[in-house]
Amino acid sequence: MSRMVGTVSMGIRAPIIRSGDDLVEIVTNSVLEAAREGALTVRDRDVICMTEAIVARAQGNYASVDDIAADVRAKLGGETVGVIFPILSRNRFAICLRGIAKGAKKIVLMLSYPSDEVGNHLIDVDAMDEKGVDPYKDVLTLEQYRALFGYTTHPFTGVDYVDYYSNLIRECGAEVEVIFANDPRAILPYTKTVLACDIHTRARTKRRLRSAGAEKVFCLDEILNAPVGGSGYNTKYGLLGSNKSTEDKVKLFPREECQQLVEDVQARILKETGRHVEVMVYGDGAFKDPAGKIWELADPVVSPAYTAGLEGTPNELKLKYLADNDFADLSGEALRDAIKGEIKKKDGSLVGKMAAQGTTPRRLTDLIGSLCDLTSGSGDKGTPIVYIQGYFDNYTTE
Image 1: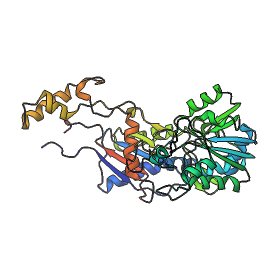
Image 2: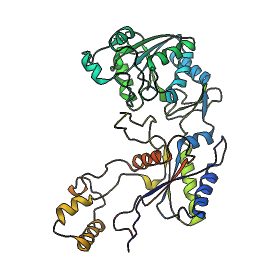
Image 3: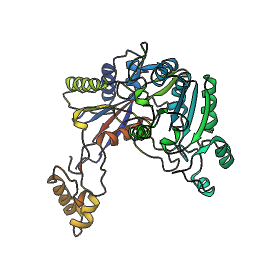
Image 4: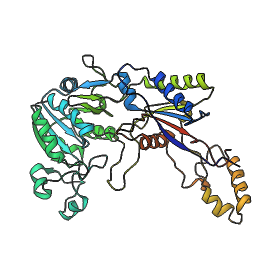
């Protein structure tokens, strides 16, 4: 009988990680202990995944509000700064905003509407339509916004982010002015010094601002892209991907040496078991919640580091297409054998082939990282390592 179980994703428990911990040792031992308990058998092409949080924690990659303030002041001048398109998040942006506010005399906060980049809504889109507001061209002052929409709170957190961010800026000693717009150039009548806080659209935002006459434009990936007085940093992503650690400190996204980490774990597992596994670091999954309308990806990438075998996209046939078209006249064992035969002879690339329609044309690391994020969660499961078996299997795998 052929094997009945295909892809399996399981969370692996691990100790609480502290700065300086040896993750190669901890991850390897955690996986091998799970194997000794009978939870898994290590196979070739299994995938071992580590959440970015434990990697950054082990690196000690932290920065304080004062570190952020010093870098903002040095790069943007310490006067009036336009802070545009931040996401609405106490965990992701509030502590960064404290540092930004401490590094300026005045913040002109420009929020996108009806929602931020990742889908957190300030206002209901239907209410916006009823009021005749055009989000593509209308720039609203705070007074206009309140007159139109009143005081609204986030449906999940219960927070009025307009008030929350405004008060936070004032508490840090800066003046604040709030406007609402979706064209980055709308900030320029207020200030020519801008910090663009969007994540995935930041390059275009920066280009448009510069073309329109902005004098200083920085993105979040350019803040703390080098250490400030011994602080943590990320050369490639700066503050992007950071999370709240304490009320005055953030944990940054893992630094580039995490690439060496995944390769070292791969080598260690090979030494201990003789099996060639793939290894990756994952952050946010790349999925969107259809009910809350939130796109999960607040990190700059799903995976900042992965081994070579995770490069590329799936190369799969659509079984139901084959069953309903090529082999519509077959059933039972004959149908199974015909489909297996088709899988065995498939091309190295199925791009553009009709039999591949409806499969998933996304990068392996984005797909696997999303699976990991859903498996480990972000709370108290205590499984920062995810072990995946059978991801590269197909219907012919025995």
